[in-house]
Image (cartoon, rainbow, N blue to C red; front, side, top):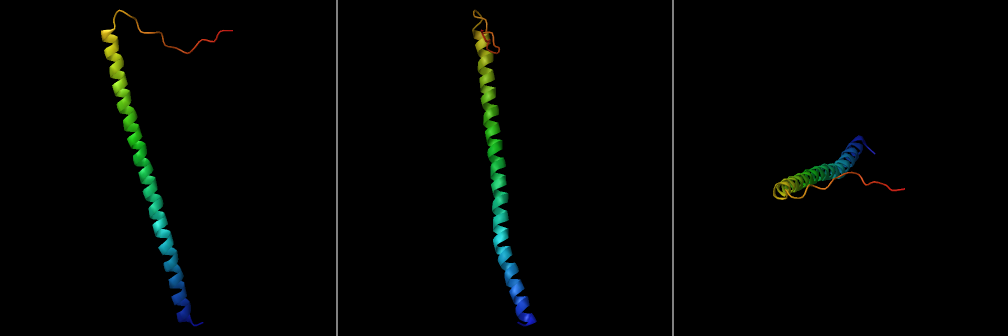
Length: 79
């Protein structure tokens, strides 16, 4: 093999490695971004649910004055 053949072979191998590695790295990066977006979406849904639930509890306290709120606490174990 001559030097020119080795140079062409090395360039071809490098091109093949780049052709495989770049799409794989791009896919991994896109997957990470998609996961972060999904987490933000789930967090925003949770916050919205907490706001709605909190407002419902506040309105229930105002309109339900004749019954005191139930005592909340950990369950008591009986021997």
